[in-house]
Image (cartoon, rainbow, N blue to C red; front, side, top):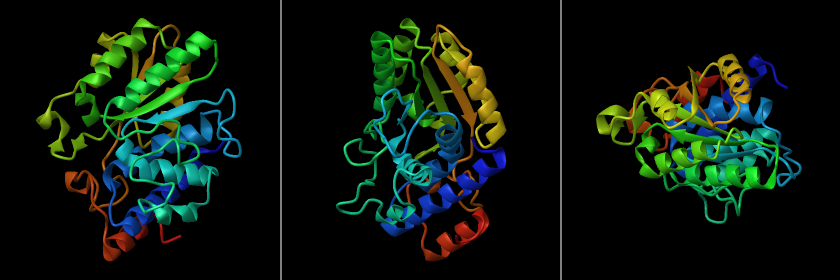
Length: 273
């Protein structure tokens, strides 16, 4: 178990390596990667039962990144957790790399589900949790979705199914950064109040600060105590968190920083390590 200070240090390094990878690729999604980092780091380092030396370990907890365009954050988290060397981040999106633009369960160790088409990862996670219930497996499935992704109808069909089957082995975390590729989420298509919507679908819901490690850990602890229904954690975040010129800017949804911008971003995050 890591201390909150240690988790914050890891999250800083994860952000920097994610940006290095996007810069080297000349393409990628920095905004949503930076917003989801603290969620990923808190789960992989202090919450989930996983073994980087045995990625297919029987009984492991599983995480599905339904907002698959934030793959750089997932890859960087897996690298820092020990699934592969962090230097591999510089192969992001390159021909022959295990680190493609969206996660591939066939290529990258630690990736439990190939994602990219928004909403489908959420649905797959529900199916995985149902299968574990049928098989009597005592483990958790986590799924991370974006708030813009909640505009997909497949999310809500799956949410109904999760409630019907009483999936208390399923925890969804919404990366609520309030921005998507076309601008402010609720202007594009209103999804708020997210917690009330999930509650009306039969889920237990919690809201927390998605950049506060202690708040995240405390909320997971509450989620684990829920019985008989799935849990949705709505984590308030900022797109591009930690980098002044990216933060809360929809324009940084899907473009790579140039050399000067990368240098500034690394400096703001804590230095070029």
